Image (cartoon, rainbow, N blue to C red; front, top):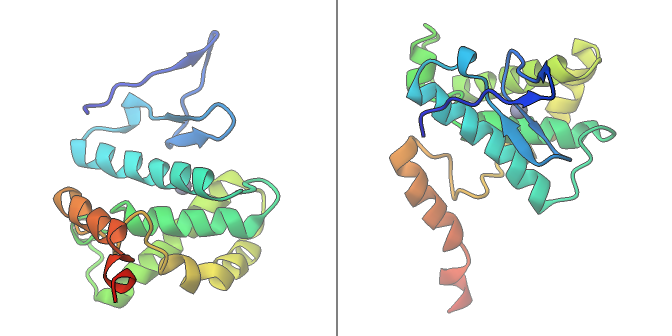
Length: 168
Ligand SMILES: [Zn+2]
């Protein structure tokens, strides 16, 4: 998909600086003026779709339960490629595996601070509380996908996750 989605709500533009999803209207909004590359498009769509997946999977209370929001932001940053190697190298952030975790934590924090009026300390506390659980929750992938092609295989791992044990 090459993305040009400028959606207007009446006469009011609903484009914002970053992509967003609306849980009641069940839509994802991406603004063409902010997305210039296919790879970026893939990342933002995947990021928002992880939120949509979480929304459908669990009774997420986006507004009142801070942990729910933090968890979904951690998962979205972890699984969308927001912190993939290429992406990070292009930011001149060389690092090891540990760096991926730091990147996910930082991005989740930024996402929360962008949408909620809370202090950085408060947001950090919540992110750290749920980090391990949510960082290790890779659904609907069996693991963190390396790239677009690998996502298919990672999803197959997830679909097959109980198969081997079930037949024992
Ligand atoms: Zn997000």
